[in-house]
Image (tube, rainbow, N blue to C red; front, side):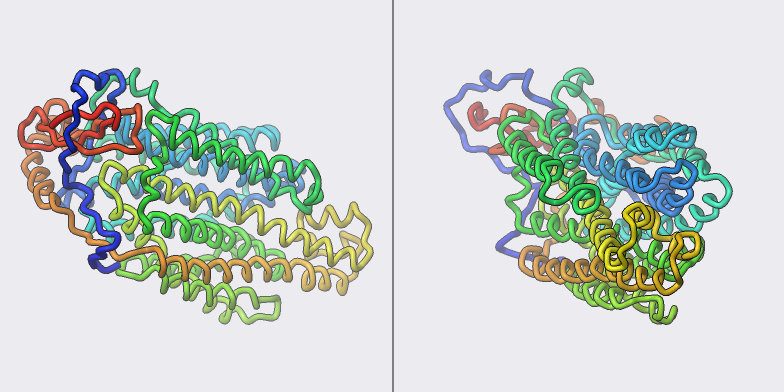
Length: 601
C-alpha cells in the first residue's frame, strides 16, 4: 500500500488538539470515572525488534498449528468417540469462543498491558489443550476446545507498538508468513498424529506454548502500565463481551442446523436467528451509550477505510476458512487421498501468501485475483489433473496474500494510537466471524447437495444420514451396500456439486470485496509526526532497560513520565482531546473528556 495522502479521509491521529474552553469548572470531572490507559507505543531499534519477533513467532506458530492440526484429525476423533456429525462442533466451539473474545482481548491489552495479556492468553490456551487431550467424551472435548485465546490479535498489536507505521507492513508480513508456515505444516502434522494417537494433536502444542511463554516473558521489552487493578477490573466491558458471545452463538447455531438437522422455516432455526440479530442491536446500543470503556468504540466507524476493511476482512475470513476446511476434505472424499496427502495440497494454497505478504500490494487487486482463482477451483472434480489443481490453488494464494497485511496497516493508519488496539482486534474479530460462518454455510451447501443426490437414488434415511455424517465412506461402496456407480453418482452430483457451490459463493463474495475496497479503502499517509522522536527515545532508554532487567526490562510509565491516555468513562463517544504535560515534562498526555464536564485548558 503506497503512502499517499487522501484529503477526504486524511487524519493526523497523534497530534493533540486543544479543547474549546467552557464555563464548567474543573472539579466537575470525577477522578473516580477517569481511567488512565498507558500509551504503550515503544518503537525499538532493528536488532531489538528481531529479538521480539522470536517470542512472537513462537506464540503465532502455536496458534496457527493448533487451528489446522485438529481439523485434519477430526475424522479420527469422530471414529474414536462414535460422534457422527456432532464432531463438527469441535472446530466450531474453538472458532465461536476465539471469535467472540477477540475485541475483549484487545481492550484487555490496553488495560493490563500487552505482555501480561499475551501471556494470559497463552496460559489459557495451554491449559485448554492439556485438558482437551484427556477428554473422555465428545461433549467434554467440545467444551474444552472452547478455551481459546486471541493470540494473533495481541501479537499484531505488539508489532504496532514496537514498529513505526511506515515499516509496519513489512513486519506484519513476517507475522503473516509465520502464520502461513503453521497453516502449511499443520495438516501434515495433524494427519501423522491422527494415525497414531489423536490426543497428541492437542498435547503437541503444550511444550511449544510453554517455551513461548518463557521467551515472551524474557525478551519482550514492553512498557508496563499504571493504575489500580481493582478499578480497571470494574470498567472492563463484561456486558459487551457477553452480548458478543450470545449474538455469535444465536446466529451461528441455526446456520449450522438449517436444512440439515432442522428445516429452515422451523422455530428452532428462526427463533435463534431473530434473537441473535436482536442481541447484535443491543450490543451496538450498549457500546454506543452504555459502556464505560467499550470494547468496540463506535467512533471508529466514522472512517470509511475502517468500515471498508471490516467488510472485506469478513469476506477474507469466510473464503480462507472454507478453503482450509473444505479443500482437504475434497481431496479425501472426492479423490480418496490420505490425510497427509491431502494436507500436502494445502502448501500451494498457503505458500504464495508467504511470498506476497512481504511485498507492497493493493487490496482490490488481491481480491480480484482471488475471485478468479475461486471460480477456477469451483470447476475441479475427480477428473482434474493434479498439476492444474496446484496452479489454481497457487493463484488463490497470490490473491489472498495481497489482502492480509495491507488491511492491517490501512485500519491502523486511519485512527489515533489510542484506538489502534481496538481496531486491530475488531479487524480480526470480523475475519474470525467470517471464518465461523464459512464452516456453517459450507456444511449446509454440501450436506444439502448430498441429501438431494441420495434422494434421487431413493436411499433409506439412515443410510443418507450416515453418508452425510462421513462422506469419506463412499470410498468403500460395498460397506454401505451401494454399487460403484451409485457411489460415483453421489460423489459427482452430490458432494462435488456442493463443493462447487461453496467456491462459486466465494468467487462472488471476493468480487464484491473488490468493489468495496475500491470505493471505501483510501490511501493513507504512513508517516506520523512523532515517529522519529519515539525512535530516539527508545534508543536513549536502551542502556537503562538493560540495567533494570536485561533485554526484558520493562519501561514503567509512572516513573519515566511517558505518554498516557486518560479515558473518561462517562462518555467516550463525543470526546475531545486536551493537551497536558506528563510528570516527566517532555511527553504529551492525551486526555479524552466528557462533553458535559469539559475542562478549561
